Image: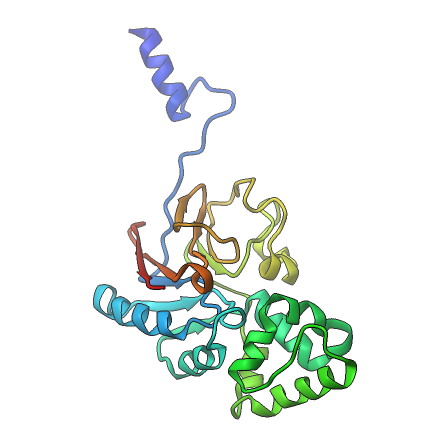
Length: 256
């Protein structure tokens, strides 16, 4: 019997274990939160998912994890819809960061954006540009995009925060360094993800809800809640309803 009890204690990480296992604490925001994955120009899926969320999680605070633009067909429509929403917080993703780089320094930094879906975003604003366009064409497209953005949209994009936190839940686009306090993180890690984010677990009890890394299905475990299901290509847009009692429920739309 003693051996059975000792084994149970080791499993639970209590007395007698030199390296006790820290029992996981569930994510506990102060109020119901819905973290919504990368939209990437799929305004059609966004409309359907918002309708479903309004039915299944009325009154919950909506937190969008970024990457509203690029790759899908209607980045313009996504931005317009997000700006209309009440009770919603929109975070910046690496694709919004690249779009702003295209406006600020199109020749030196615009190429990366154009290769990663920027051409599709431009097309949604009625601007035609190939990935191998010449310097003058790139400069003209950058200025045309700036002019095509609705009043206040550029300022809105620049003001998007890189993370949001309530209780022990942090929502961001990619993933901070698990070994570094949140206050000491670099902006790059929030936008592009730290190399250890998916490998190592945090030790401070903070759960990170994030997008950026595409999965066939949303996932929940080891301090991470991943909600990027590759909407632009898969037709699946996913959100996670996270309640103050630690419950996590996934809500998604799947439409080609």
